[in-house]
Length: 329
Length: 265
Figure 1 (cartoon, rainbow over the protein chains, first blue to last red):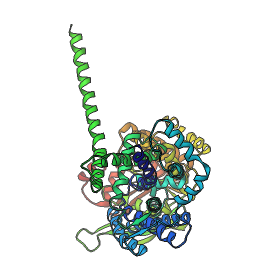
Figure 2 (figure 1 turned 30 degrees about the vertical axis):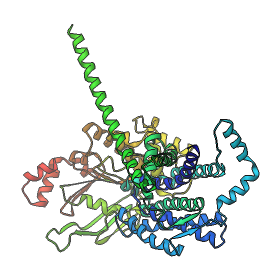
Figure 3 (figure 1 turned 180 degrees about the horizontal axis):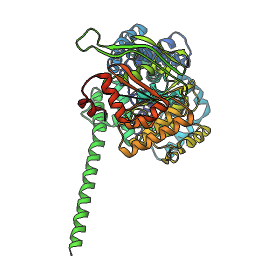
Figure 4 (figure 1 turned 45 degrees about the horizontal axis):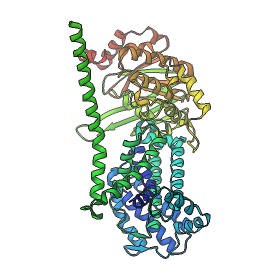
């Protein structure tokens, strides 16, 4: 059970990079971008094929991210220059990418089992440090059975995701970043302050999909394969992470919101892992669980809010009635 | 000349029953520091004129020169480096989910290249505070408040500051007090007079309020059916009354006044 949770958190941290990408389009740019389903696989495909052709895994991962950036830019161009509705530009790009991803991979599934990846390289370096045996010693001293295989992926990916988060926070506070946020907030205003909204949207959607593809490349290396269908429904997972995170951890500042998004991605993985342990649910039900989760996260805050309001009004009425009856005496 | 409009014409829906000649051969020159108020009934072409100057509309024919530089082909975001603008809708000029200081930082970079350096720095924060203090609304103590939480009047005052504190070549005010209650409108009108005077901005202000058009500015133009039908400045404008304006309007239009009086007053 705990080991399953450990795996869930590990995956959650990698998927958090994708969730940060979705946050940039959905929340910052107010651009519902569905390219994600395709660009995630593009990242995985380009990274996998590069590794199989002898590119160092780290460089291959960057190639994957760049491919995603390019795909996102094209979605942005379709919307800004082609004047296509944002949802439709994303869907068009997603469909086009399905074929492109198949072309890149040459077959529907590619295995990385015997290749060296960023994680195998990390592992061989990590094993020399002895951190694992130290942490596992702690783990067992708490009386927990069966220690996890390695802490390297969790800890290093957590650090890496936090660096990405920090870069995102910084970027959104720069002069360019402020203009990007204003583009999502009030286009008319930012145009009157001499910002080229077209370029900002293209770059914003590009960066978002760069993050998504980076996450895709890492997931492929983590799982040891790339599959042309691995991105199906991913946008909903990203959205679930953003919405759950925001609902649980708040959105007061940019820094808090990006934390919330990472937290949301991890919690999403934990919830799915828990759900899959229920006897009558199997892996095929995962998309349904995700959909229900997003619906719950969207609807429940409103219900809670209405309840609170109602309670507050009833209380006020009661207070007033009491004052009146007291005044009458 | 700070602003020169030459032969400007624009027709909407040309060749259809809805055809509308929004601007017809407009000539207008504004000297540096001139403050022009623009009046006219609905559909006279006032807003179209503003949009053609700002670049959110392109004229069919004609030229727009800002500071003797041809800008008629430049898109809105490029012209915005020299043009400050305040809209009628108090929500239009600011980004609601961003803080006061972030909004000011956006306005501050209007005539500079935006780079990957922090938008709000300590030095800039001091600079923003000094300018906010001049509004007398206490906004200088709320730098990190989100603009969406401000009242309409506060937002419009902030918009006015954002449009002017980088000292643009031209300031366009598009009925910027029309959506406010009378006391707030009064406040914004006073602030307008103050900032325009302080920075010596070349200003074009559209208004439906004839008294405001007479009280403010150094020059007044009246538009009708896409043409400038009346243009006074200096002492002549000082002596002008609302009655004069209505008479002038009637004389040029040659129509009976009653229906228009209700629109104009």
